[in-house]
Image 1 (cartoon, rainbow, N blue to C red):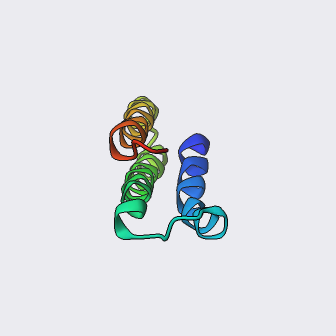
Image 2 (cartoon, rainbow, N blue to C red):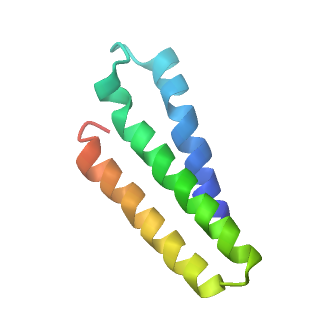
Length: 82
């Protein structure tokens, strides 16, 4: 869960870094992969936290793996210039 939480924090903070250090203007097209990544990470984190309270650790592990794979796919296919 910690890795997915760190991915969420990184995804949410990336537009602020781009705002200060990028020469291109921030548009919806630039921010779209980061919004998608934040939604994936936050929904996965909510599901993993809820299931961990019910001691469903195997399902938590499966959700974590799928969340990380989904974040990689968003990075590869959603942001070709990243």
